[in-house]
Length: 554
Image (tube, rainbow, N blue to C red):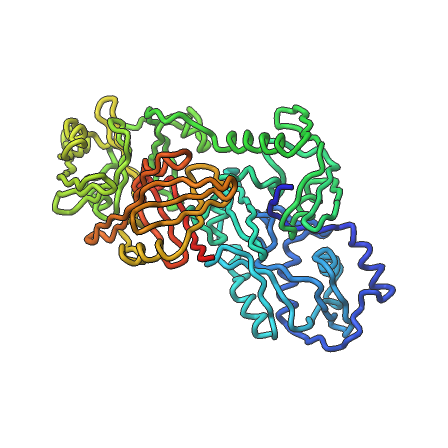
């Protein structure tokens, strides 16, 4: 059975709760429950996640996960008290929701028995943890961290471009949560560095999937081996709101957006369908440079022209041919002084059509430029000037081999956005993308990083390929690294080394590993962007790839 995220909520128990309440089966005999305003506040807020019928509201729960969409989950059983003194034992979330949707202004929960436990997310460990609450002050501390008052201040649109995050449950097992788009994930405190590659490992999207619809009823098996049949997407979302893992009972049917009926006989068939769906949503485009531009109005009311590598990229962003404008009009708003100011503020990574590599450029106000992420130190000069007669802005670069192929051409500035500058010379192009994080000093020195790496083994994950099973790296002072796949127990040897640029606060890690699939590591010089005794994050020069290492001293 594949372990996936999501939390179970069985609404079949709704009627049962009132039956048990009526015959006092769930009434708590002990009268040691404390009245607390914190329980009333938290339950009122939790009730807003559900509609009047007790179903999870998909628009209020973008991840489909109670810990991230609400803030925490109670650990059951839980003993509560009504404001009239009646006490009740609650054995599950569905019991609690039944109580909430039937509460009134005259009869509501006002007390809870301390101590009790909640499950909440620890962003420093990337895991859901169980926290014990011993009194009302500790309960209010949890609610303050939830920031319920500011939860609606993050304004995201409805665009469907899923991103997913891998999280650990309290037992240390990993699972995937998926957000409809990056904005919603960022609002929950995640960063692009947290995003996982394999969103297809998440079986259900709250509110449904754009690529297909389930043909209900379908049956699922929860992490506690309960078999539940659901009859709608609403019931499925609610049934998965606070269960960590689940699997489908096969076969079952789906209908694609084209109206085709597909019978899914097994898990492999369903994963294949999800992979195809996510590929469609990713809107794959060719990498050829054939720029198109569109004119947009910014939130402040200004008119701005933005450019795309080609028409496909623009169409994926929601524009059509009717929106395209002449990119040359961008020349009229390119100011050479603004370009210079932007260039000297941050590091820029250049994707040059003449070359196969992407390196960083540190532009200095004195007209010098330093290339970073190169095999050998490389320095040169640069300048930006405007032709007052035709209004065009040009950039000139004088670089050493092998980058002198860039110097041999005159480059016209076609696009001059804050985070992206595009140059063209005939059929050739340079796309500069800004990264203002590269020059931040590392959290540890080269010597400290050596010491950390040699002390223990390190589990790692990477965006370069799908390493489903944990992989273990052991670093030796001799410069040898041994990588062991925990799935196959096969060990591969290679070389590793560190280099630094103290004046820029840059630290690099490099590999030479000849065997598959690790030989791809050798294609990059890796920036050390996060470094501590327990955690190391390496990012490629173009910012598209990463290696994440977590220490294992056992």
